[in-house]
Length: 345
Image (cartoon, rainbow, N blue to C red):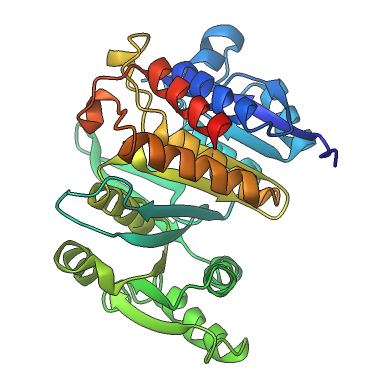
């Protein structure tokens, strides 16, 4: 059976981005993933070549394909540039940030971690409504930031989290908030969760619990196995998803998906690591796992499963690992081992 070709935008990114993207493409080619790539630039490469970290051609490509795989982007220092990642989320209303954390290499401090952070992606304190108030001779005497959560935005991300949990066989959704102090900004989030849980009849399909964000951080360190799906607002989700990545070995093992109604962008959530760029030291696992999420998104679940199995077998059967995982394999050698695993079963 011939699989229909799927248009997709490819953004190699900055720093180690091109290296881990090349590794990921090699594995996707071995899987015969049917993506027709439109390669575009963003981040520092966009500024250098087009004077814009998000050139029009890149945005137009994503509008056309509605699907993208993205390497890490560097936000240039100075010059008033906003984060390209934040701009992409806003431009395409990518309201759901999905960050799974799954233990791949046993024998670490935390074993058998399997949880997911669902983060609201475009509201809260990341809307960028900030300003300084000058006093006397100090132009930055007071810094102010306004966070905004809307009923619609809360409802949208919460419904996504509950539906995701049910569809993937998860048992519990934990709503993370700070409504005891931030009674309006995160109170609306908690209030909406309680209402939605009853209104949509989720009771009996999935359990809901509530937790204050600081208690959640502590309990994730003490006993992460009590959690399944965590859903929370933008800032809390940013922090907790990195904490959760630490439980499984760091950001090099953490994929991310940014999902909206009309587009989806998949990425490695770590930075561009310019200090090791071009040295073949980068670990492409996070982007590979993001590519597996992308395959799931386009309903090619068999290929996603084969990709995840190849990663697991390469790490734990062949014991081929990059330096950050205690091995000695280069980026390309690790990719070659994954390609062999895909082709040989």
